Length: 369
Image 1 (cartoon, one colour):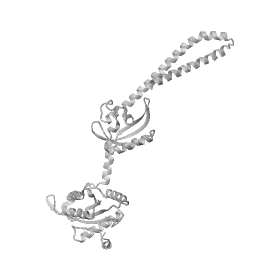
Image 2 (cartoon, rainbow, N blue to C red):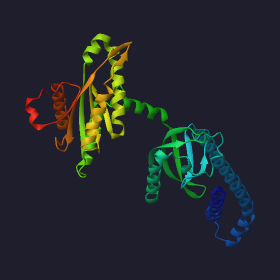
Image 3 (spheres, one colour):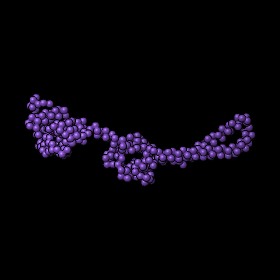
Image 4 (cartoon, rainbow, N blue to C red):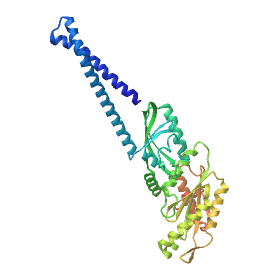
């Protein structure tokens, strides 16, 4: 590519020189007012060799100067790219044609040559394989488009990092390629995940909080509209928690809540999710389970708290009152189902606590909500 560029420059200069010769002929005739062609020919024959050598020498010097200038600019650009803090990768359909030192470091390699001719797909983590496939399909349809994406990669040294990159189409040494400018966003992404976790996770127990529970509940309801799914909501309140909290203090109460949370998670396992609403109130969403399985999980929860829990060397005991509402029998909206499960929970308390009750519509008007 550089060879052809240099030839074009020299040819252009020679064309200019040739034009100057034509201009020179007319200029001599005009200046000396020469009408005699013989006289004109003698002058031109005398001057032309001198001018020709001078102009050719000037053309060669100018062309060489321009070529050196272009070469210097190219070398300067290469140095800037090579030493750039930005990670720059040039590839053709994933095959790495060029990568600078920052890019090699980003991929966990101390040598750029180690990465040349390797395919970027080798480094894409399985969590991002689907995205990688979509990117390739997009580029096949819209090869000139600019891409801005995030992917997880496994580096040469085995470390996992999150990358954000911008990719544009370029011409590289006479062939179509794409230039990627990438950066490591692992820390930023981790911070975002932490913020999200704090927003959707109960700080004390590590369980999903009310917001996380409602988001999953609404999604489950939407997906259940067309597939006749059945699921249940369990509203749980701990009997005797206030007495424990008063006698052992808030720290003792917190220890108890953490222990109870662990018990409930084991009881629910893969059947659904358990979340903490507030205080000593928990809520469970069970999906794709039978009527008998709702009752089985409720019995397991009651059984899990049948033995005293040791806190600060003292034996304390709490029991669960559990209310169950089923979809679609007891409601079609999240708030309606939770409310009816809450009503059933109060029915369990009225039946002596430490038991479960399934919502009965006729009890609604007589329940404390």
